[in-house]
Length: 484
Ligand SMILES: Cc1cc2nc3c(=O)[nH]c(=O)nc-3n(C[C@H](O)[C@H](O)[C@H](O)COP(=O)(O)OP(=O)(O)OC[C@H]3O[C@@H](n4cnc5c(N)ncnc54)[C@H](O)[C@@H]3O)c2cc1C
Image 1 (cartoon, helix red, strand yellow):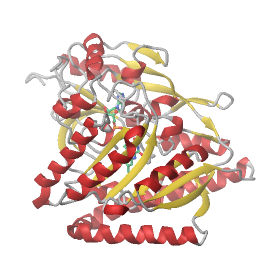
Image 2 (image 1 turned 45 degrees about the vertical axis):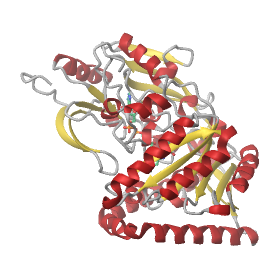
Image 3 (image 1 turned 135 degrees about the vertical axis):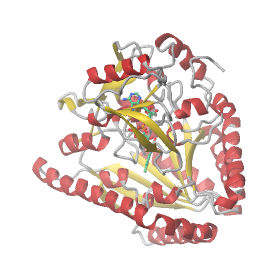
């Protein structure tokens, strides 16, 4: 920003902005536009005053991908209107800042769902597009970009452009972490469902071989799957896990009845969410303290969880039906929420690896976790399918998502273990999910995302002065229009 900068516009002000778990702090000139015209004004202001801009959706990414320290943020939360809903075609056009949960509220009782929704239901549509997020249905429905029919992009020069699936920029914008322009609206394809209910089976797997055999089976028979993995189990038990597999089921009810129980479901989600956040505020430090005994705590908890699941499975009591909302957005094991699990120094890491190499990859990655002084507090496995986005992390294979809560005295050794995880992932041709990253170095980034060069080629054409930037882009070495 220049010393002689103009007064900020009426809808802009300097604010402290933190990353999700509070581990990264920054200060930015935050604009909260309500119209495309105001977005354009904000970009023009930043161009005139020598500032870079980063778009921010709901700020639910874990790291620094929606932060821009010392520079400008365009916070899209006030642009959250549903523009057009076409029930017959099952499509919906929304403003960029619309939360995914708002779409569910609009369409779910009409027997429609939004595939590829991440667990964080308060993610915005544009945030979900730019991080190309994935849901528990990722191997079937692909990542979020698969549901995008078109989007309107506001370019650095103030012009708008409609980008549909056939447009050459489509795969650069999807997963492109907001570096090419500001999305102002998007049209999404919804999917018809039999009812808002799913039947869930919880299947214990004693080791990595049982895990992969079961995944092979449920990927054919089910619609959504997520796996709790015990990262502490070793030797013959490596890969011990509990597979939660869901499929849509019929449910005989009227639209009015659906509306009623879904309203109660949405309210319950909101209550639990508020409870989780209050728990974080009140007891976050106590939990951090308890996690000083993390190894013992998590070893025991995982053992108990697996043992109980096995018992219920043997007793034939391991399945039930419940609202998809609960399964998707409130997986039993995501409570306590990310804030609590990660703690103030914590971070997540989600890495993919190809299907053909899955067994060896799981054994190696879990082995690295066990060698860390602070193994992950939670470890989740998902299945994925290939994606053409330039920076998308989705591949035909699986991902492991780790949540780390490193102790202060082990910070350096924990970080070294995370580097080994990333290096092993890169060696195996896997990727690291940028929505959850706050540790990748330029060397690691270039290795896992070699197509960043193509993204920068587009950036040179669309944004030659490097107006769009972020802390993440600078950290991984693509923060300027010049190829490093
Ligand atoms: C508890 C929890 C669970 C989660 N579960 C999952 C999961 O299951 N799967 C998964 O993939 N992710 C998951 N995430 C991550 C989260 O869903 C993603 O980070 C998502 O991108 C957040 O959306 P947002 O609106 O907050 O985006 P932000 O974090 O605000 O932004 C994300 C990126 O999009 C860009 N952006 C945002 N809006 C615009 C715009 N209008 N124009 C251009 N660029 C824009 C930003 O610059 C940034 O690069 C989870 C997060 C939490 C906290």
